[in-house]
Length: 336
Figure 1 (tube, one colour):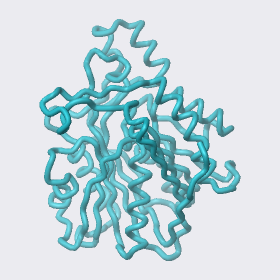
Figure 2 (figure 1 turned 180 degrees about the vertical axis):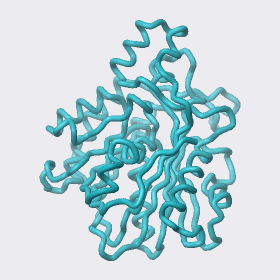
Figure 3 (figure 1 turned 30 degrees about the vertical axis):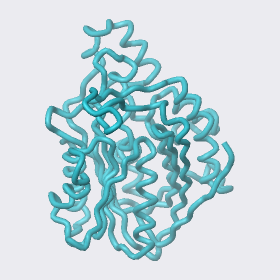
Figure 4 (figure 1 turned 90 degrees about the vertical axis):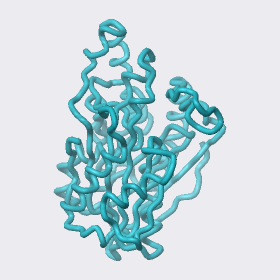
C-alpha cells in the first residue's frame, strides 16, 4: 500500500474513556454441544477467543453506550449542558430513523445546541470517530462525546463457527475537549470500497428488504488485506518517529493470529501491543477503547502515554491515530 496524507490536529485533548460490556461472560464451553470440543478448541486456537459478552434480548449498542456515557460524564464532572457535540459510531442502531445519536442525545439530556449524528463504520470506526471529534473541536466545539459500539451477536449464524465464536458486544464513550496546551493528534485514514464484499451483512437493507440479516466474512481475504495494509498505515502515522518511542499500540482486536502477525511485521515488543480478545472477542470498533479501559487502564490513568490506535476491517476501511495523552481522569470498564 502506498503512503498517503497524514492529518495533524492541534489543541485537542482526550480526557477519559469508559466501556460497557453486557454480562455475564459466555465461555467457549457453551458451544461444545453445537460443534464438538475439538472444533471449538480449533477455532479458539486460531482466533484466541476464550469468552465473549453478548447482549440480552432487547439490549442494544445504544443502551451500552448510554451506560458508558453516563458514567463518563459523572467521572469527569461534566454537566450534560456542557457537551456541544455527540458522535455515535455504530453499525447496529436501534432503528432506521431517527439517528441513534439523537436518541442518545435525548436520553443523556444534552442541550439543543449540541450537534448529534451517526457514523456507520465498523472496525475502523473508532479512529475515524476520534478524527471527526478532533476536527469538530478544532473548528470551535468545546466538548465532544464520542460513543462507539456494536452488538453483532444478533447477526451471527448459529451454525457458522467462524463468526459465532469470534464476535462479542460492547459500547464505549470517549470525552474529547478543547485544550490549547494539548500535544498534536496525528491521523491516517484509508478506504477501499472494491473490497466491500469481504465482510458483509446480507439482508436488512433496501437492496434486499425482508431478508434475514446475517454476517458473512471471507477470512483469508481479510487476513491478507490486514497484513498488506496495516503495517504501512502504522508506519505512515509514525511519520518518521521511532516505533520504540510509542508506549503502547492498541490494535483492533480482529483475532489473535492477525495481531501476532502485525507485531512480527512491525518488529514490536509483544508487551507493547496488549491483547484482550481472549476475554471479549472481536467487538468491532469498540475493541480499541475497550483495550484502553482494560489492559491499558492502569498506565493511561497514571502517566503520560504515547499511543497508536489502529482500526481495520469492514469496508474495507482502516485508520490510525497517534495520541500523546496526559493521564486520563478515567479509563474503566463497567457491566451493563
